[in-house]
Length: 310
Image (tube, rainbow, N blue to C red):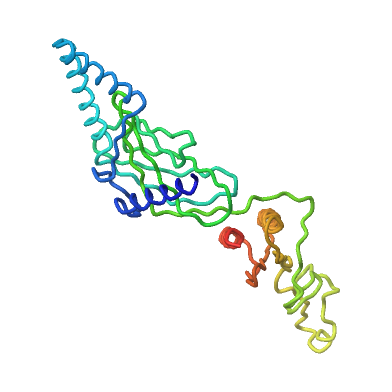
């Protein structure tokens, strides 16, 4: 049964893709607006059919007139439901990123030249839909993230029960956006990272690599006495050209798989955030790939993306 359901879902997605290819901005047209009766609408149609059968069976013109009036209301509701969505332009702002098991708030914007009523958005059926009460407005639609990686934004469902709740007028939009899901940070008690033994070490604070002229108040221990003996008129002292920089740390992802890999990635994500908060340079070694030590938001984003794709 699950296999048949999966095949039906694949067929439906393929059919929807043919009707509306991926796009950054979608304008709703008759081709991608679908109108289905709601539960209340099904009972309404059943009542209409019963009344019509009773009117024809007993040749009662009043009951027939009532059934025709109800049918007119049904058709009018269908047209109004279609007009409520037709011509509406929907777009999504560039989606950023989130950590696993977090809720990513996706900004959805609508544009219209006329008022719209009772618009609701959602990505997954089980989630509570987000309502937009006014056209030319924006809403933050929640998207729950499960696992790390780089994913396309799922179909955005826009629907409305306007005007009388008889029909569920909807459109399932295929938006051309992606989002990043980084490993969930796992707090650890101590920061344990590897120091880089390769390359030159930073100079200690008491090492000096140049000289400058003597100035009043300089420490006499820094005086170059031998040079002073040769040229008493021009005394010089030792001078540190640059302040010592903190030695970078390396975060190494071991060659493991399964739950051990997820645990290592979560710990590495936590270490990166802590080192970035301390403004301390760090590097990353993962899958025979080496990211040179640095710090800053761009470097952090690059490292987190490597963890997401590991």
